[in-house]
Length: 133
Image (cartoon, rainbow, N blue to C red; front, side, top):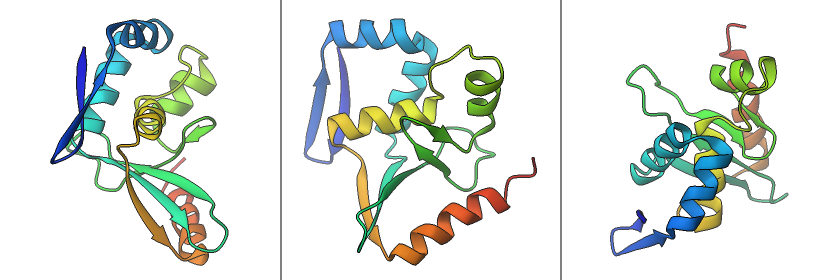
C-alpha cells in the first residue's frame, strides 16, 4: 500500500492491486518516481478561468529542474524523457511527469490554480520557447 498526501490533514491509501497494475503498465521505477513527485506536492493543475481548459505544471525531482514541465497527462509532456522514451523509442507509455499528473488527477491531490486564458496560452508558448531542441 502507498499513502499519498492529499493535504496536511488527509492521506490517501492506494491499494496494492492498483499499485501492481500501475507498476506493470508503467514500470516500477516510473511509478515510484511519480509517487515521489506527488508526495512532494510538485503537481499543479492550471485551469483557464473563461474556457475551462487545463494543463498540469509538474516539477520533477531533479535539482537542475528550475521550471515545471508542461504536461497534458494523456498526450504530451515537455520533458526530454517523454520525447526520448515515449516518442522516439516507444519504450514507455508515459514519462514520470505524465504519470504523476494522471495519478494526482485521479486521486484529486493536485493543487489547482485558476488563471486568465491569455496567461494559460502564454505559459504554453513559453514552454516551447525555452526548449533548445
